[in-house]
Each structure stands twice: as structure tokens, then as C-alpha cells.
Length: 326
Image (cartoon, rainbow, N blue to C red):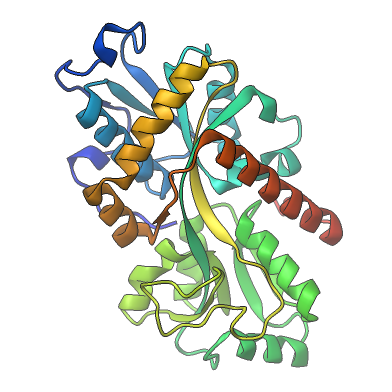
């Protein structure tokens, strides 16, 4: 994942956003003090600035105090467990990345259950992209497929362990009859650094992580995984456009509360988060920095989306006997 440009609101560590108390739910019981916003990843990826921008805008709009609390570890499971076990009073939120829904398949003895976290809002989504170093001969993803079929297992692909990128790469190979040499990484940064250095032939990762290198001419885009072309890469066809057997695949960001949080709080939070995400300044930053398309779903829509994602990806995991690639 890319390290995004930071303004004062995007500094690392724990940040408290304190604004005048106007709008504090007009005397209602909630919130009763600073709200803890758990981010189960360290500063430097995409989830941290998404959380900071959203929390800052919600604070600006409502006067609520929000505290960003980074709790990284175990591919997000540590922070998720903290949020899941928090009192269901609306005073602890979690803002996380799509890999969260894969944790039950990849993390043994997960310290929480999916049922302990309640869907609040799908913030937005962005396609993944396939990229290579400019000295490689590939002009599009079909070139990679052709070379891999001619030289099975010889073309290396850098992938983040226990990620959607790993799963779509596994699906593409089985569905289209080619074989890559999969190289696994524990972080998005090293994944990108190795394809930049020519250590790996190609990578599949978030578009936001690759965009700066596409603009600088240091990496070549070979295709994107969405159902339409990325607005920032209008000349790069999707994998489906290239005739590859696939399905639309996105990275995404979502907000959760501990299960049992009163419905009026869930609904109010959803409304405030949607207002914040759709505000022109926040939406523009999300689009520019990580190519995010704003969704701002309802809780029910987010829950249905999560079930669809888990059904699809857990089947891919089973079909390909994927163990997590630690």
C-alpha cells in the first residue's frame, strides 16, 4: 500500500480531533465523550488516512471528539478483536480494509467472531491493478498469460499474503490455464519495491499503491480488475476487456461497531459517515490519493456485500487449497 501525502490530520500515532461542542447530538446521551476509532493497521497504508479523513470530517460536521487508535498486528486481527470486545455503546468504531473479511480463513484461532462486529458502512472501493517493470516485454495482461503458458512457473508475481490480490491471482491462473511463480510478502510496500527493482516480473496490488509509479514511468500498467476502466487509467483495459476469464475485484474500506450497539446509534453514525464521505473535499482526496469510488452504503447493504465477498473468496480458497502463504 502506498504512503499517502499527509496534512496535519494525517500524522501518525494517536490523534485527537477536538472541535467545539456544537452539535453534540443536541443533548442526547450519545456520544458521552471522545470516540475511539480503531485502525487495525499502522500509519502508512491506505486505511489509516481513510480513517483520519473520515473522522476529521465527522468531527467538523458534528463537534464529536474522535481519537484515532492504530492497533496493528496479525493482519488486522488484533485491532478487530479490540473493537469486537469493546462495549456496544457507540464509543468504539473500527475502520478497516477488505482483508478483514478474509481473516476467518487465514488466521488460526481468530480472537473474535465475525458475529461480534456489526456492519455500519462500506465507505468505498478501488480496483486492483497488474503492473510490471518497464524493462519486461509485457504490454498488457494477455502478454503475461501467453508467456506463462509458454514457460509455466517461470514468471514471478509479487503478492501480499492473505490478501484479495493473492486470491484473484490464484483464481486467474486456474480459470485461464496458466501458472505463475507466486512470491509472498507481509507488507504492501515491499511488494511494490521488488517489482520496481525488477526482482519480480509482475505484481497485483491496490491501484493506489501503484499510481505514483505509473505516473513517474517506473512501472507499466497491464490491466485493472474492476467492471470498468479506472478513471485515472482510461487507456488501460480491464482484465475482462482483454478476454481474461475473471470477475470484478476491488479493494475496499468499511466501518464497523461492536455487535449490540443500539440501532439509533448505528443509524446516526451511518448518516454522519455517509455525509462525511460524500463531502466534495473528502471525496476528492479519496479519488486523488487511492482512486476510491465512494459507495457510502447502508448497514444492510454492507452486510450483504460482506457475505457475497466471503462466499466468493472462501470458495476460491477451497478450490485452490490456499493456506495463507505465510
